[in-house]
Amino acid sequence: MRAPARSRGLAVLLLWACACSSSSPGAPPAASRSGLTTDTDSRSYTDTSQRLEFLARYLKIKSPLVDAEYVIHFRDNSAGAIPGPSDWDIRAALQVSGDVAAWHAGWEPCPPAAPDVPAWGRELLARRPGWQHPGTPPRCFRDPRHRASIAFVYDADHLVLYRNSSEPAADDPR
Image (tube, helix red, strand yellow):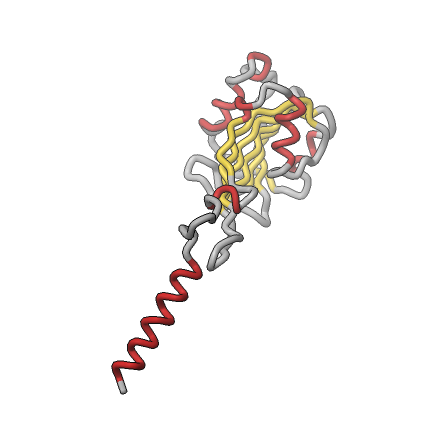
């Protein structure tokens, strides 16, 4: 009696493994099945409108933008045998033409001892000569509902350094 039950269990396990496998012939690679999965640097777009259009797929645009520099790492984990939450890290330097305050509305100021702009922000600002030396120091804000979201706002320059991540980064103030 035990041998047939074991064989049946093994057969069920093999069928389940085959059904869940993404390596079956004709199956598209995981990245093409998950339409939002990307590792994209804004430098891959020379056209401003294309650059901003791509950014809008991953970041809610809270006020009109003139331009942006960004790095987007996004893993859409909603597909597959066992769907799960997505993972992301979106870092952006935004030149805002509209309301700068919209980017931190409802957010809390960072602690007074917050460090200077993190390295990721300085790297994005360095891509544009006009953004390298903002006229005023930034104000830092954190989303109280999602502690891994942070904004450094240069009001007079209409610049926003914005990061939204599924996990808090070690180089960001808490």
